[in-house]
Image (cartoon, rainbow, N blue to C red; front, top):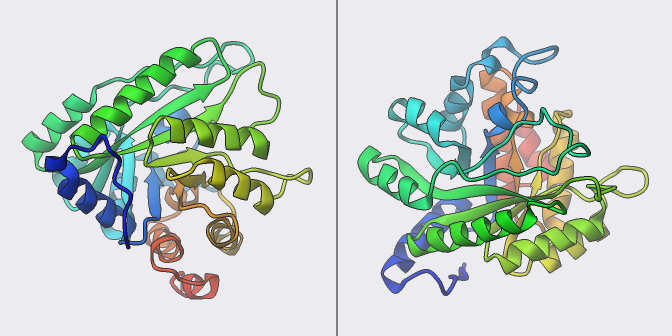
Length: 300
């Protein structure tokens, strides 16, 4: 498959960038992103409680999954990678550069999430640690008073990542008092266009819903077209049954035109063996062109 190489990737980094992109997408240009950034984003709500296995309360549960399952990248915070990385050197990592908690309601205060570290810090860390760092990620909130600051920071992060041959994934969510429906397809398409304008390789977005709050295929087509050459990753959302999740994922890719997914809870909120199987099934649909039926067989 021919990959589109951003023009801000220097000639001496093109081969490295291509290797990273090919590795995380299995040569299909579609990304299975195992999202492990919720320890900050959702505090402990996603890791401890009814229906969640006790092993999920430890951050190491996600590293165990990522080390044994098929994934494109494991996206989590720098500190977690630093603490566990030496024991899990086979994992392809994506360093999440910023995060914020959900303690303050968005209608009370416009969200702002500043980068904790620079791309340069990540590049240095990759060299000294020997870990397989494939890229960086950054969450950007549209619609609030801090939008301009986050846009500027996101632009610099994408450019610095490309200058070093790394991939750049942006989480882009319209949030705040002026956002009435986060799952409005037209609004999400606008966020996708912002991701394209920032030069992101992939943009993780909300899933567009119709009036019945079901996945809207036609609206997703608007989103994926608006993203241009930036691949759309649909968020995984709250945990649902396996067939429902895998069927929707298949339709998102093959009917809506998405180029992957960013999934956390639907993987890590399971016991280790089941979590590995679910990750493999998601990877099969995303990066191995498997059907839903073929993916379901991997769960047995």
